[in-house]
Image 1 (cartoon, rainbow, N blue to C red):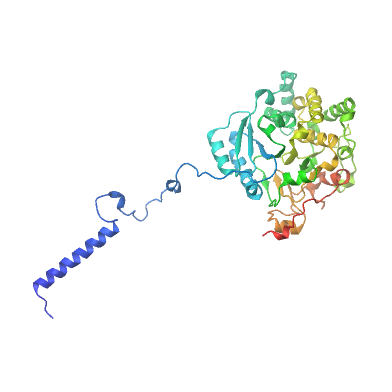
Image 2: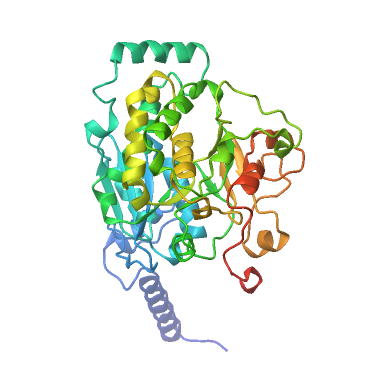
Length: 411
Protein backbone atom coordinates (compact mmCIF):
# COMPACT_ATOMS: atom_id res chain seq x y z
CA UNK A 1 0.00 0.00 0.00
CA UNK A 2 1.37 3.44 -0.87
CA UNK A 3 2.30 5.63 2.13
CA UNK A 4 2.29 9.45 1.98
CA UNK A 5 5.23 11.78 2.64
CA UNK A 6 4.10 12.46 6.22
CA UNK A 7 4.18 8.76 7.06
CA UNK A 8 7.72 8.38 5.70
CA UNK A 9 8.88 11.42 7.67
CA UNK A 10 7.33 10.14 10.91
CA UNK A 11 8.96 6.72 10.46
CA UNK A 12 12.37 8.32 9.87
CA UNK A 13 12.07 10.42 13.06
CA UNK A 14 11.07 7.32 15.03
CA UNK A 15 14.10 5.36 13.81
CA UNK A 16 16.42 8.27 14.66
CA UNK A 17 15.08 8.53 18.22
CA UNK A 18 15.38 4.78 18.83
CA UNK A 19 18.97 4.74 17.52
CA UNK A 20 19.92 7.78 19.63
CA UNK A 21 18.42 6.27 22.78
CA UNK A 22 20.29 3.02 22.32
CA UNK A 23 23.57 4.89 21.77
CA UNK A 24 23.13 6.84 24.99
CA UNK A 25 22.38 3.65 26.91
CA UNK A 26 25.56 1.98 25.67
CA UNK A 27 27.61 5.00 26.76
CA UNK A 28 26.23 5.02 30.30
CA UNK A 29 23.39 7.51 29.98
CA UNK A 30 24.74 10.33 27.83
CA UNK A 31 27.04 13.26 28.36
CA UNK A 32 30.59 14.00 27.27
CA UNK A 33 32.48 12.14 30.06
CA UNK A 34 35.27 10.14 28.34
CA UNK A 35 35.28 7.61 31.21
CA UNK A 36 32.04 6.18 29.82
CA UNK A 37 33.57 5.26 26.48
CA UNK A 38 33.86 1.45 26.30
CA UNK A 39 37.39 -0.03 26.34
CA UNK A 40 38.22 -1.16 22.83
CA UNK A 41 38.95 -4.79 22.12
CA UNK A 42 42.64 -5.59 22.47
CA UNK A 43 43.35 -2.90 25.06
CA UNK A 44 45.55 -4.09 27.96
CA UNK A 45 43.76 -5.38 31.07
CA UNK A 46 44.19 -3.20 34.12
CA UNK A 47 46.53 -4.56 36.80
CA UNK A 48 44.60 -6.59 39.36
CA UNK A 49 46.15 -4.38 42.06
CA UNK A 50 44.17 -1.45 40.67
CA UNK A 51 40.94 -2.96 41.97
CA UNK A 52 41.98 -3.05 45.63
CA UNK A 53 42.88 -0.59 48.34
CA UNK A 54 46.69 -0.61 48.65
CA UNK A 55 46.34 -1.01 52.43
CA UNK A 56 46.02 -4.73 53.33
CA UNK A 57 42.76 -5.79 54.92
CA UNK A 58 42.99 -6.22 58.68
CA UNK A 59 42.70 -9.83 59.84
CA UNK A 60 42.21 -11.45 63.19
CA UNK A 61 45.62 -12.58 64.43
CA UNK A 62 44.41 -13.72 67.85
CA UNK A 63 46.32 -16.84 68.90
CA UNK A 64 44.27 -20.03 68.91
CA UNK A 65 46.98 -22.43 70.13
CA UNK A 66 47.05 -23.09 73.87
CA UNK A 67 50.80 -22.97 74.46
CA UNK A 68 53.14 -20.10 75.29
CA UNK A 69 55.09 -20.68 72.11
CA UNK A 70 56.49 -19.00 69.01
CA UNK A 71 57.94 -19.78 65.60
CA UNK A 72 61.51 -18.44 65.30
CA UNK A 73 63.44 -17.64 62.13
CA UNK A 74 66.99 -16.30 61.96
CA UNK A 75 67.01 -14.75 58.51
CA UNK A 76 68.50 -11.97 56.38
CA UNK A 77 66.67 -9.51 54.15
CA UNK A 78 67.90 -11.05 50.91
CA UNK A 79 66.51 -14.44 51.99
CA UNK A 80 62.94 -13.14 51.74
CA UNK A 81 61.88 -15.52 48.96
CA UNK A 82 63.08 -18.56 50.91
CA UNK A 83 61.50 -17.23 54.10
CA UNK A 84 58.13 -16.86 52.38
CA UNK A 85 58.36 -20.38 50.96
CA UNK A 86 58.95 -21.89 54.41
CA UNK A 87 56.26 -19.72 55.98
CA UNK A 88 53.66 -20.57 53.35
CA UNK A 89 54.16 -24.30 53.78
CA UNK A 90 54.24 -24.20 57.58
CA UNK A 91 51.19 -21.95 57.74
CA UNK A 92 49.25 -24.22 55.37
CA UNK A 93 50.35 -27.44 57.05
CA UNK A 94 50.13 -26.30 60.68
CA UNK A 95 49.99 -22.74 61.94
CA UNK A 96 46.86 -21.41 60.22
CA UNK A 97 44.92 -23.57 62.67
CA UNK A 98 46.74 -22.15 65.73
CA UNK A 99 48.05 -18.68 64.80
CA UNK A 100 51.20 -18.86 66.88
CA UNK A 101 53.33 -15.70 66.57
CA UNK A 102 56.46 -15.41 64.45
CA UNK A 103 59.71 -13.92 65.76
CA UNK A 104 62.26 -12.91 63.10
CA UNK A 105 65.88 -12.32 64.12
CA UNK A 106 68.55 -10.46 62.12
CA UNK A 107 71.92 -8.86 62.85
CA UNK A 108 70.85 -5.85 60.73
CA UNK A 109 67.45 -4.09 60.65
CA UNK A 110 64.76 -5.72 58.52
CA UNK A 111 63.73 -3.67 55.50
CA UNK A 112 60.17 -2.59 54.74
CA UNK A 113 59.61 -5.17 52.01
CA UNK A 114 60.62 -8.04 54.28
CA UNK A 115 58.35 -6.84 57.07
CA UNK A 116 55.37 -6.22 54.80
CA UNK A 117 55.49 -9.53 52.94
CA UNK A 118 56.18 -11.76 55.94
CA UNK A 119 53.46 -10.02 57.93
CA UNK A 120 50.98 -10.73 55.15
CA UNK A 121 52.08 -14.38 55.02
CA UNK A 122 51.73 -15.00 58.76
CA UNK A 123 48.44 -15.96 60.39
CA UNK A 124 49.56 -14.79 63.83
CA UNK A 125 51.42 -11.75 65.11
CA UNK A 126 54.89 -10.94 63.79
CA UNK A 127 57.87 -9.44 65.60
CA UNK A 128 61.14 -8.23 64.06
CA UNK A 129 64.13 -8.22 66.38
CA UNK A 130 67.61 -6.76 65.93
CA UNK A 131 70.33 -8.96 67.45
CA UNK A 132 72.69 -6.95 69.70
CA UNK A 133 76.27 -6.84 68.31
CA UNK A 134 77.66 -8.44 71.47
CA UNK A 135 75.42 -11.48 70.86
CA UNK A 136 76.36 -11.85 67.20
CA UNK A 137 80.03 -11.08 66.70
CA UNK A 138 82.99 -13.04 68.17
CA UNK A 139 83.38 -12.63 71.94
CA UNK A 140 86.34 -10.70 73.32
CA UNK A 141 88.40 -13.77 74.16
CA UNK A 142 88.61 -14.81 70.49
CA UNK A 143 91.93 -14.03 68.80
CA UNK A 144 90.71 -12.38 65.61
CA UNK A 145 93.94 -12.78 63.56
CA UNK A 146 93.96 -16.49 64.47
CA UNK A 147 90.28 -16.73 63.51
CA UNK A 148 90.93 -15.11 60.12
CA UNK A 149 93.85 -17.45 59.49
CA UNK A 150 91.73 -20.49 60.34
CA UNK A 151 88.94 -19.22 58.08
CA UNK A 152 91.34 -19.26 55.16
CA UNK A 153 92.62 -22.71 56.10
CA UNK A 154 89.11 -24.16 56.37
CA UNK A 155 88.18 -22.59 53.05
CA UNK A 156 91.24 -24.05 51.32
CA UNK A 157 90.43 -27.49 52.72
CA UNK A 158 86.90 -27.29 51.33
CA UNK A 159 85.20 -27.58 54.72
CA UNK A 160 81.49 -26.87 54.26
CA UNK A 161 80.88 -23.21 55.26
CA UNK A 162 84.23 -23.29 57.04
CA UNK A 163 85.45 -20.16 55.27
CA UNK A 164 82.24 -18.16 55.78
CA UNK A 165 82.62 -15.80 58.73
CA UNK A 166 78.89 -15.19 59.14
CA UNK A 167 78.30 -18.94 59.42
CA UNK A 168 80.60 -19.12 62.44
CA UNK A 169 78.67 -16.22 63.99
CA UNK A 170 75.39 -17.97 63.27
CA UNK A 171 76.47 -21.27 64.86
CA UNK A 172 77.77 -19.45 67.93
CA UNK A 173 74.56 -17.42 68.23
CA UNK A 174 72.24 -20.42 67.82
CA UNK A 175 74.27 -22.42 70.33
CA UNK A 176 74.24 -19.91 73.16
CA UNK A 177 72.37 -16.70 72.45
CA UNK A 178 69.12 -17.16 70.53
CA UNK A 179 67.19 -18.10 73.67
CA UNK A 180 68.49 -14.99 75.47
CA UNK A 181 66.95 -12.54 73.01
CA UNK A 182 64.61 -10.13 74.75
CA UNK A 183 61.52 -11.06 72.74
CA UNK A 184 62.01 -14.78 73.32
CA UNK A 185 62.10 -14.27 77.08
CA UNK A 186 58.31 -14.00 76.81
CA UNK A 187 57.92 -17.59 75.61
CA UNK A 188 58.33 -21.11 76.97
CA UNK A 189 58.52 -23.01 73.66
CA UNK A 190 60.07 -22.37 70.26
CA UNK A 191 59.82 -23.95 66.81
CA UNK A 192 62.91 -23.21 64.74
CA UNK A 193 62.20 -22.47 61.07
CA UNK A 194 64.75 -21.81 58.33
CA UNK A 195 64.35 -20.28 54.86
CA UNK A 196 63.95 -22.65 51.90
CA UNK A 197 62.69 -25.69 53.78
CA UNK A 198 59.61 -27.74 53.01
CA UNK A 199 57.00 -29.28 55.29
CA UNK A 200 55.63 -32.23 53.35
CA UNK A 201 52.67 -33.42 55.47
CA UNK A 202 49.79 -31.88 57.39
CA UNK A 203 50.58 -31.77 61.11
CA UNK A 204 46.99 -32.32 62.31
CA UNK A 205 47.99 -31.62 65.92
CA UNK A 206 49.85 -29.01 67.96
CA UNK A 207 53.48 -30.18 68.45
CA UNK A 208 53.98 -27.75 71.35
CA UNK A 209 51.01 -29.24 73.17
CA UNK A 210 52.17 -32.76 72.36
CA UNK A 211 55.56 -32.16 73.96
CA UNK A 212 54.19 -30.47 77.07
CA UNK A 213 51.47 -33.03 77.75
CA UNK A 214 53.96 -35.89 77.43
CA UNK A 215 56.68 -34.27 79.57
CA UNK A 216 59.02 -33.80 76.61
CA UNK A 217 61.50 -30.93 76.33
CA UNK A 218 63.04 -31.34 72.88
CA UNK A 219 61.84 -32.65 69.53
CA UNK A 220 63.81 -33.46 66.37
CA UNK A 221 63.06 -34.89 62.94
CA UNK A 222 66.39 -35.89 61.33
CA UNK A 223 69.45 -37.45 63.01
CA UNK A 224 72.64 -37.62 60.94
CA UNK A 225 76.44 -37.61 61.20
CA UNK A 226 78.43 -34.39 61.40
CA UNK A 227 81.47 -33.61 59.24
CA UNK A 228 84.47 -34.75 61.30
CA UNK A 229 86.70 -31.83 60.28
CA UNK A 230 84.29 -29.30 61.80
CA UNK A 231 84.37 -30.66 65.37
CA UNK A 232 87.90 -31.99 65.93
CA UNK A 233 88.22 -30.72 69.51
CA UNK A 234 84.54 -30.55 70.48
CA UNK A 235 84.52 -33.76 72.49
CA UNK A 236 87.65 -32.72 74.36
CA UNK A 237 85.75 -29.65 75.53
CA UNK A 238 82.70 -31.75 76.41
CA UNK A 239 84.80 -34.15 78.48
CA UNK A 240 86.31 -31.23 80.33
CA UNK A 241 82.84 -29.94 81.12
CA UNK A 242 81.65 -33.34 82.36
CA UNK A 243 84.68 -33.73 84.64
CA UNK A 244 84.19 -30.24 86.06
CA UNK A 245 80.41 -30.58 86.49
CA UNK A 246 79.53 -34.24 87.19
CA UNK A 247 76.39 -33.32 89.14
CA UNK A 248 74.88 -31.61 86.10
CA UNK A 249 74.92 -34.79 84.00
CA UNK A 250 71.46 -36.39 84.06
CA UNK A 251 71.53 -39.95 85.48
CA UNK A 252 69.12 -41.14 82.76
CA UNK A 253 70.97 -39.47 79.89
CA UNK A 254 71.47 -40.45 76.24
CA UNK A 255 75.28 -40.49 76.16
CA UNK A 256 75.33 -43.87 74.41
CA UNK A 257 73.55 -42.32 71.44
CA UNK A 258 76.54 -40.08 70.80
CA UNK A 259 79.39 -42.42 71.85
CA UNK A 260 78.68 -45.86 70.34
CA UNK A 261 79.97 -47.19 67.02
CA UNK A 262 78.17 -50.42 66.02
CA UNK A 263 78.12 -50.52 62.23
CA UNK A 264 75.03 -52.76 62.13
CA UNK A 265 72.96 -49.71 63.03
CA UNK A 266 73.92 -48.27 59.66
CA UNK A 267 73.14 -51.43 57.69
CA UNK A 268 76.77 -52.40 57.21
CA UNK A 269 78.13 -48.92 56.54
CA UNK A 270 81.31 -48.42 58.54
CA UNK A 271 81.24 -45.58 61.04
CA UNK A 272 84.75 -44.16 61.12
CA UNK A 273 86.39 -44.57 64.51
CA UNK A 274 87.58 -41.13 65.47
CA UNK A 275 90.26 -40.08 67.91
CA UNK A 276 87.55 -39.32 70.46
CA UNK A 277 84.49 -41.02 71.89
CA UNK A 278 82.09 -38.83 69.90
CA UNK A 279 80.54 -40.73 66.98
CA UNK A 280 79.40 -37.52 65.19
CA UNK A 281 75.67 -38.27 65.58
CA UNK A 282 73.50 -35.19 66.01
CA UNK A 283 69.94 -33.96 65.64
CA UNK A 284 69.71 -31.69 62.62
CA UNK A 285 68.80 -28.42 64.29
CA UNK A 286 67.25 -26.65 61.28
CA UNK A 287 64.11 -28.42 62.50
CA UNK A 288 63.82 -28.46 66.25
CA UNK A 289 61.05 -27.75 68.71
CA UNK A 290 62.20 -27.16 72.23
CA UNK A 291 61.68 -25.78 75.69
CA UNK A 292 63.33 -22.41 76.16
CA UNK A 293 63.48 -22.82 79.94
CA UNK A 294 65.85 -25.76 79.46
CA UNK A 295 68.26 -23.65 77.40
CA UNK A 296 67.97 -20.74 79.83
CA UNK A 297 68.63 -23.06 82.78
CA UNK A 298 71.80 -23.39 84.86
CA UNK A 299 73.00 -26.69 83.38
CA UNK A 300 72.90 -25.68 79.72
CA UNK A 301 74.24 -22.21 80.55
CA UNK A 302 77.34 -23.66 82.22
CA UNK A 303 77.72 -26.17 79.39
CA UNK A 304 77.70 -23.48 76.69
CA UNK A 305 80.00 -21.15 78.62
CA UNK A 306 82.54 -23.95 79.05
CA UNK A 307 82.51 -24.76 75.33
CA UNK A 308 82.62 -21.09 74.38
CA UNK A 309 85.92 -20.59 76.20
CA UNK A 310 87.49 -23.28 74.02
CA UNK A 311 87.00 -21.09 70.95
CA UNK A 312 85.93 -23.95 68.67
CA UNK A 313 83.06 -21.97 67.17
CA UNK A 314 85.68 -19.75 65.52
CA UNK A 315 88.98 -21.65 65.40
CA UNK A 316 87.16 -24.71 64.04
CA UNK A 317 83.57 -24.76 62.78
CA UNK A 318 81.52 -26.18 65.59
CA UNK A 319 77.89 -26.26 64.53
CA UNK A 320 74.94 -25.52 66.76
CA UNK A 321 73.43 -28.91 65.86
CA UNK A 322 76.09 -31.09 67.55
CA UNK A 323 76.33 -28.60 70.42
CA UNK A 324 72.57 -28.77 71.02
CA UNK A 325 72.54 -32.54 70.59
CA UNK A 326 75.34 -33.22 73.05
CA UNK A 327 73.78 -30.77 75.47
CA UNK A 328 70.33 -32.37 75.50
CA UNK A 329 71.83 -35.89 75.44
CA UNK A 330 73.87 -35.24 78.60
CA UNK A 331 71.71 -32.81 80.57
CA UNK A 332 68.21 -34.07 79.83
CA UNK A 333 66.37 -37.28 80.65
CA UNK A 334 66.54 -39.21 77.38
CA UNK A 335 62.82 -39.93 77.64
CA UNK A 336 62.22 -36.19 77.33
CA UNK A 337 63.58 -36.15 73.77
CA UNK A 338 61.04 -36.90 71.03
CA UNK A 339 61.40 -37.93 67.39
CA UNK A 340 58.61 -36.51 65.20
CA UNK A 341 58.23 -39.59 63.02
CA UNK A 342 55.00 -38.48 61.34
CA UNK A 343 56.12 -35.11 59.91
CA UNK A 344 57.56 -34.99 56.39
CA UNK A 345 60.39 -32.49 56.00
CA UNK A 346 63.01 -31.44 53.45
CA UNK A 347 66.12 -29.34 53.86
CA UNK A 348 68.74 -29.57 51.15
CA UNK A 349 70.14 -32.20 50.72
CA UNK A 350 68.11 -34.49 53.02
CA UNK A 351 64.46 -35.41 53.33
CA UNK A 352 62.46 -37.51 55.76
CA UNK A 353 59.02 -38.93 55.12
CA UNK A 354 56.62 -41.01 57.25
CA UNK A 355 56.77 -44.73 56.50
CA UNK A 356 53.13 -45.54 57.27
CA UNK A 357 50.91 -45.54 54.19
CA UNK A 358 47.93 -44.49 56.33
CA UNK A 359 49.86 -41.45 57.56
CA UNK A 360 51.08 -40.58 54.06
CA UNK A 361 47.53 -40.64 52.72
CA UNK A 362 45.56 -39.07 55.55
CA UNK A 363 48.11 -36.32 56.21
CA UNK A 364 48.29 -35.45 52.49
CA UNK A 365 52.04 -36.02 52.34
CA UNK A 366 53.81 -35.12 49.11
CA UNK A 367 56.80 -37.40 49.63
CA UNK A 368 57.65 -41.07 49.38
CA UNK A 369 59.04 -43.17 52.21
CA UNK A 370 61.13 -44.99 49.61
CA UNK A 371 62.45 -41.82 47.99
CA UNK A 372 66.18 -41.68 47.18
CA UNK A 373 66.76 -38.68 49.48
CA UNK A 374 65.08 -40.14 52.56
CA UNK A 375 67.78 -40.54 55.23
CA UNK A 376 65.60 -42.00 57.95
CA UNK A 377 64.42 -45.42 56.85
CA UNK A 378 66.48 -48.60 56.75
CA UNK A 379 66.20 -49.89 53.21
CA UNK A 380 69.88 -50.02 52.26
CA UNK A 381 69.96 -46.77 50.28
CA UNK A 382 73.08 -44.68 49.76
CA UNK A 383 71.67 -41.83 51.85
CA UNK A 384 71.12 -44.14 54.81
CA UNK A 385 74.77 -44.17 55.81
CA UNK A 386 74.33 -40.60 57.05
CA UNK A 387 71.43 -41.48 59.35
CA UNK A 388 71.71 -41.94 63.13
CA UNK A 389 68.03 -42.68 63.69
CA UNK A 390 68.45 -46.43 64.28
CA UNK A 391 71.08 -45.59 66.90
CA UNK A 392 68.58 -43.28 68.59
CA UNK A 393 65.97 -46.04 68.65
CA UNK A 394 68.46 -48.30 70.43
CA UNK A 395 70.05 -45.85 72.85
CA UNK A 396 67.58 -43.00 73.13
CA UNK A 397 63.94 -43.14 74.09
CA UNK A 398 63.16 -45.89 71.58
CA UNK A 399 60.58 -45.72 68.82
CA UNK A 400 57.48 -44.16 70.33
CA UNK A 401 54.22 -42.93 68.84
CA UNK A 402 52.65 -40.58 71.36
CA UNK A 403 50.02 -38.65 69.45
CA UNK A 404 46.67 -40.40 69.54
CA UNK A 405 45.43 -38.70 66.38
CA UNK A 406 43.19 -40.90 64.23
CA UNK A 407 44.61 -39.81 60.91
CA UNK A 408 41.92 -41.65 58.95
CA UNK A 409 39.27 -39.34 60.41
CA UNK A 410 40.69 -36.36 58.52
CA UNK A 411 39.56 -35.51 55.02
